[in-house]
Image (cartoon, rainbow, N blue to C red; front, side, top):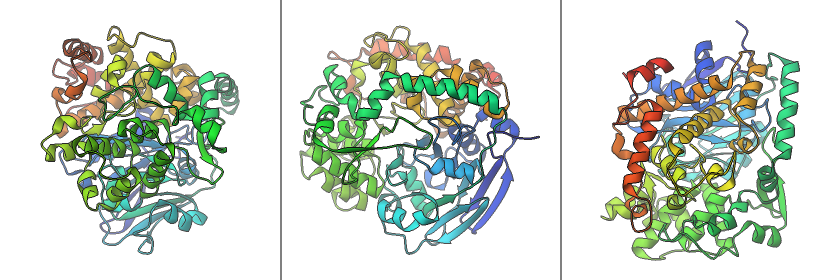
Length: 566
C-alpha cells in the first residue's frame, strides 16, 4: 500500500549494544496516532513499564504527516517518561530539524539503552550511524552545534543534560527548545550528546491539486490574522503588558499578580533593541527575535519567570539568564520558578544568571535546585512554596485570573502546562471568541476539546500559533490532501482524544490518581479560586471525558477509542 505524508520508516537504536534496526511504520498506527506526540506516546506505551525509572525509558523522536509540507509545520517531538514529574512527557520544538528528519526518510527514531561512552547519532538519507562524541562531551549547546552543523541539522544537549538536571532541554538550531519535563536529562543519561540529520528526499503528497487549494486558503488566513501579525512584530513578549494589566502576571513566586513591567515589555524591547526576525521552516510569521549582536530575545514565559516571578525588572538580566539556560540546555520556566521558590525561602542569594549557571553545573546550591522546585521545597520542609502541578512548575499565567486555564493546569497529562490547552486564547485573547475568564461555567467541555485539538496538532505536527488563524476544519482538510485519507474534523479530534486518553492511562499505571489533578494551596481561598467550585468543575470535566468519578477512563470510552487499560 502506497503511503503518503508519512515516510513509512522507523529507526530503532540500541545504545547498549550499538545496533541500528530499521522497520516499517504500521499503517493503522499512522492513521490512528498520526505522528509526533501521538506516535511517540503509542510507541512508549507499547514498550515501557510506566512504573520503571524514567532514565530507563526509551527516548522517542517523531515527526508528523504534515511536517515540512504544510505552513508552520517545521516541528518535531520528543517523547519519554519525565524524570522531573514521573508522568509521560512530550515536547515539541520548531526550527528546521524536524523537516530535515522527514527529508532523511524517517517518521520516528526510537533510542533505547545507555552507551558506555559519549556518542551522537548521524542520520543521512536513510543511513543511521552511531558515532563517537568523546570530543563533544562537556561542551554546551552553542559549541556543540557549531562543531556539528556542517554535517546537518543538529539537536543536542548541553552540560545540564549531561549532568541530568531534572529540567534539562534538548536544543536544536541553537535556540529552539524541546523543553519541559527533563527530556534532555534522559538523553544525557543515555550518553547521547546529539542527533545530526541530513536529508534530500521530498515528502510525498497524495493530492497535489487538493493540497494547493487548501494551502492557498490556509496561507490567506494566516496572513490575515491580527494575533500572528503581532507575534511577527513583537514576538511573544507582546503579551507582557496585557497579562500584567489583567492581573495574571506571576510575581514573587505567585504571591502577587502585578508588577512594574515598563522596562520588560514588548514595547520596551522594540524601542530599545535593534531586532532581527528568525523563522522556522515553512513559517512566514517569524516570531523568534534576536538583537543585531545575535543574542536571542526571551519568550514571554521566560520574561515572566525570570522577571516578575523572581522580583526582577531588569531586562538585560532576563536576557543573560535566558542565554545561560539556552546554552546549558535548560527549561527557563522550571528554572525561573525554582529560583523564585529559592528566593521565597532564602532571599536573593545570587544573581539570576549566576544561579542558572550553578544549576547547569550542579554546583553548590545549584545541585539542590537542579531537582526542580517540588523536590527542592520538599527537602526544605516547605512543600507549599513550590508552584507546581504533578511536579511541573506552573508557567506565566496566574490561574486565579483565568479559571479555565487553572483547570487546564490541573488536568494536564505532563503536569502544569499552558500548551496542553491554551485556554488563555478564549479567556484573554478572544480566540476563537472571548469568554468570561472568572467562571468555571462551560469550561469543562471546552477544555476537553482544546486538549484534543492540541494533541492532534502536536501529532500532525504544526505550530500551535497557527490555531490563532485556523480551525480543525483547515487542519483536517490539508491532512486529507497530503495523506489521501479522508479525515473529517471529527476524525481529527477523535485522534486527539485517543492520544489524550492513552497518556492518561500511562500516568494511571505509573501511580497517579485523581488527587494529582490539583493546584498548590496558594491559589485557593482568600480571594483566589473557590475550592468547591474547582472540584465541581473537575468532576464535570471527568464526565465530559467519559471518565469515572475517580478520573479513570470508563471501559466503554476505551473501547470506543480502541484502547485498553492493561
